[in-house]
Length: 396
Ligand code: ADP
Image (cartoon, rainbow, N blue to C red; front, side, top):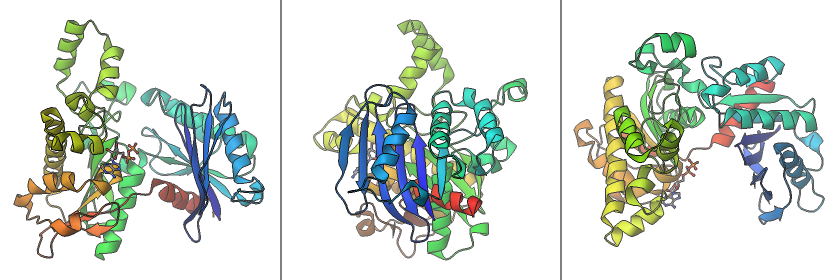
């Protein structure tokens, strides 16, 4: 079965076609600058990357260009659109309404729309992508895979905020968590490679990308995660602040003459390691600047690793133990010096790092020593493959 996996942002659309039997990617790419001007990137398996600039006023034209590229006579990965058997859509926020992936129909779209005010930047774009696919490929079954669904198993004491209960009753203000597809994929894989029973394993997954979150997975269920109502809570990220005393916001707002949306813009876009270092949100740039003696780059790196280690410790406490710790996503997979800085703070858990294994990049590998009390792994995430698997499971 061939699955088209679609991940729509407000002005972008990432896509992959995955053959579910071989789990090979047949083609992948992205559309950028939708609604501005428009650029399509297309790459068939084993082929050259093609870049085409063409107007994309809406996501519908973007999807049309993707379909044209996929069925292009010369470089198309497919002979015709009939070869697309199902479409899997990443949907950011399912609120409390979606506890698992679901076949998309009119009712589901309506319910996703009801979650729009929880993710005003993301959900509307996801729905536009769904509608565009429905217009252009009517009859092809579609599945929605939610970033929040995996975390719906969190217990109430973990997901409630310490604010008046009426805000939960009236508006469903609570912790939801994100990156659920990745945390689920990586924790399952950890059980497979360690040969342990997923149903009794205590795993902490550190998804460290530009957006970063940590998840405590106890017996295959998410029991806590660092992102909250929105992705802003938790770790220090590329440009997001993570946890901060809310009173600091009022203080800064008064000093700088900012309103709430101005403050949130700063917390989302101008903070994190970029805001601290004044150098970059990218850890390659930070590592270079730090090695050249830039003290704020070094501070940003140390603060990032410290916050990760603090969350790992708190999740070991939340689960009353931990068997496996996994690092994944851009930083988790590629940045050995961050993994080392985190693990060096976790000696009390009996963790011993295999420095030679830790020097590898981007591959699945055990990075703890044979006598480490907790096993530590790098496990590359693959959210598109996870979405394709979920899609196949529901449409078969
Ligand atoms: P997202 O999906 O949230 O945009 P990614 O998981 O792609 O993020 O991670 C992006 C980040 O990973 C980059 O900002 C960079 O800090 C880091 N990264 C990616 N590749 C490398 C590398 N080879 N070495 C060091 N850091 C890397």
